[in-house]
Image (cartoon, rainbow, N blue to C red; front, side, top):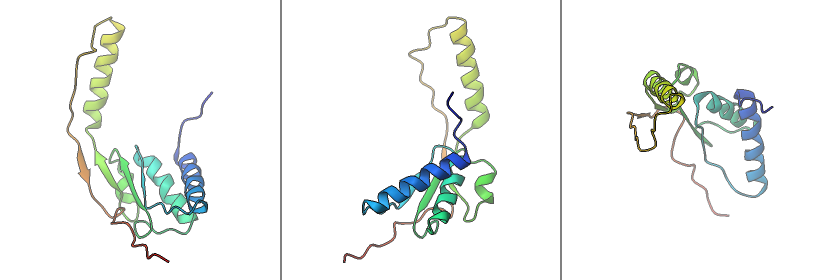
Length: 128
C-alpha cells in the first residue's frame, strides 16, 4: 500500500531533488508545492541543505492553512475556499453514486494568491 505524502516525506523528496540538481550543476531557485504541509517539508529540506528561504530558494504552497503564517518567513500560498470545495466535491460524489451525468459541468471557485515572505526574485547568478 502506498503511504500518504507527509511533511517528512516531502522534506526527504525535496532534499534529494535539491542535491540531484546541485550535483548536475543546476541551481534550483523555487519549489512550488500543491499543499502547505508539503511546503513545510520544503522549508526543512532547504534548511538541511543550508539554503535560505527566500534568499536562495522561494517556496509556495496551496491551502492557506494556519501553519502558513506560523512559518518564518510566512509562506506564500494560494487561498482556496476549502469548505466550498469540500461541499462541492461531496455533492458531485453523491450525484455520481446516484448515476447522474456530470461530465459537462465546469465549476469555478475563487482563489487568491497571498504573497508573503517565502518568495523573492531569484538570486542573481554571476557568470564565472
